[in-house]
Length: 70
Image 1 (cartoon, rainbow, N blue to C red):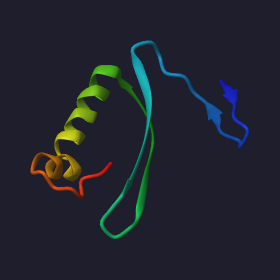
Image 2: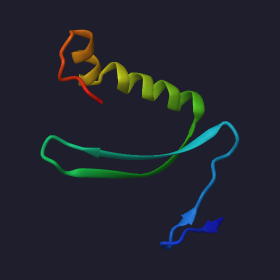
Image 3: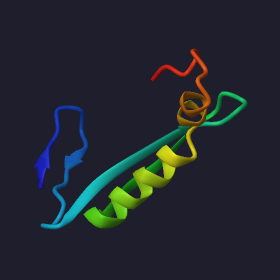
Image 4: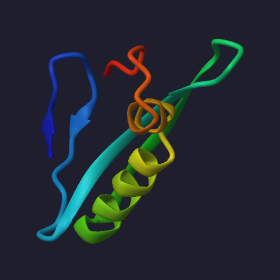
């Protein structure tokens, strides 16, 4: 592993996998950070597709709402 400039070690994923960092802001403005996850690329593609399907911006775009900007 190599060292990053700010003290963290850089990891690389195995072939066919991706390292994913997840941060989420809830309705109260709190930010939740999750540890890096090594996930198969297929699972990553499926998870992103599900998030896009359930996105409020996607819903608004399909209903013709002009406020749906990304």
